Amino acid sequence: MDRLEGDFNDVLVIRELRGDFPSVPFFDDIDIAELTKGDDDPLYLTIPIGKANVISGNKRFYDEAWLQELERQVKAQRPIGIMGHLSEEDAKTKFPEEAVFWLGVQRVGELLWAKGYIPAKSAARERIRRYKHTNKAIGTSIFAKAEGVWNKARGAYDMLAETLQLQQIDI
Image 1 (cartoon, rainbow, N blue to C red):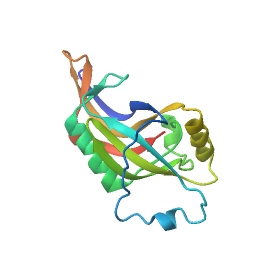
Image 2: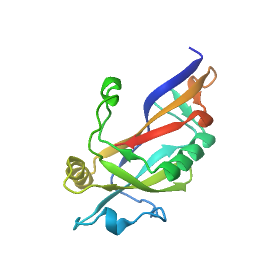
Image 3: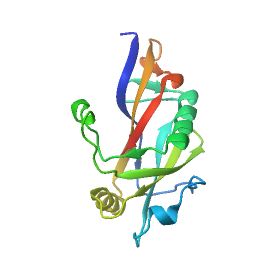
């Protein structure tokens, strides 16, 4: 198969919930007070959502142009995310509770970091809290439509940034 196209999920970075994290600013037009109204202890998650010049476990290569397009689309679309993934069949009819609202992105070297708000009184909130306290490693997964072209020398599909159609970024 020389060409890959359609829906996909892919994990680009897995990170422990400890150590140094950049101070990712919120998007300018986000009303944090209204978003977190009634939440006495807002929980935010800062984690990498993408990396340039990396081959994923699914044999997809993401270059600099891809990462820049991912950043542009996150800024424009303000995606949400869920815990895990929906099957192809469930994605047609189900709309699970949001686990994260992505509220800012910042590039640091080859990593694209994002800051997300984890809603109060959600299963995701309790999970992320436990993960933070046990130093559990978690990853984010891009759910999108895109195309890639097989690169024999690389042994991976070169993902085409201009075809990216971001849908959400899951935990």
